[in-house]
Amino acid sequence: MKTPSRLPQELEDRPFTVEEARRRGVSLRRLRHGSLAPLGKGLRTAASLERIPLSERVRPFLDINDRCAVSHLTAAELGGLPSRRRVSETMTFHVIRPEGAADLKRPHVVVHRAKLYDDEITTYQGIRITTPERTWLDLAAMLTVDELVVAGDHLVRVPHPDFDNRTAPLCTVEDLQRMIDRHKGKRGLRKAKLALQLVRVGSDSPQETLLRLAIGRAGLPEPELNVPVDDGRPGRPVRPDLSYRQYRIAVECEGDGHGEESQIVRDIARSERYRELGWIEVRISKRHMQNDASSAVAKIRATLIQAGWRPGRGS
Image: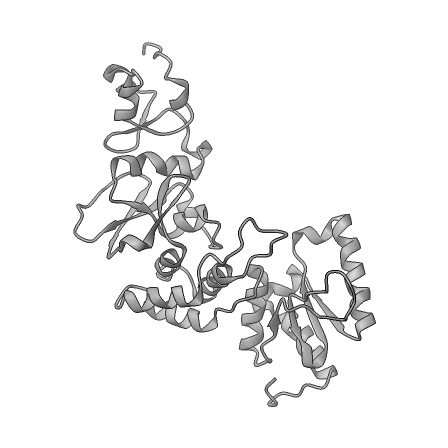
């Protein structure tokens, strides 16, 4: 096979539409060359899909299907929404198309046709994508209730100015309820209703949410989430991941970064502060979160009983 001419540099590392390639001077003969992989009608790529960022993999498909928007697990991934991507779907992406629009069949693309309102579409890096609250509702057909609560907690959390590049939640509990009320009969709706009852403002990580859910299933009182403990001192107060103010118990979830030296120093200082305040600190690691956080729940239960709580008393 004759060595093909080089593509314009802008097209070498991403998928592109035939129309875009023609505008850049690529001949039809070059577009038919075996070195280009077809991605469906009007789409080509010279690059391996594994090396292409998800946003760039999706973009050309939307360019030639302007009634579509990124949705479901793909919208969650692009928007940083916690969701467990299935291994079988690592090379696919999801888009949504309004009811009544023609069916589309493309390799590596899952096309959902459903009722879609204009205010349920936004943009991300110039790509049409479902809004966070619509994405959450669509995920109800694909995730477990716990996974859906994790996603919901992430959406409604109030960002911290020191760590986040935004000042407002991605959406509110009311926004999620509005989606449920608007799409009666939608697949996954019952699961969404169950999950929304468990969504709370204040959780800063999936581990905190999963621990809170396990605590609830075990019949323990529901903890407060990231509420500062004011000791009247200047400076930033300690802010337990989960806490029982009445019993002076602080529960801290240790993520991957807690093995770093700087974080170890901060953790020691935090523990000393709790002792000075007369609080008991319960530290939870990934090991404690196995088997529906059974070890974590046992530690918290024992600490609550030690502090005076008794089963059947509620909070």
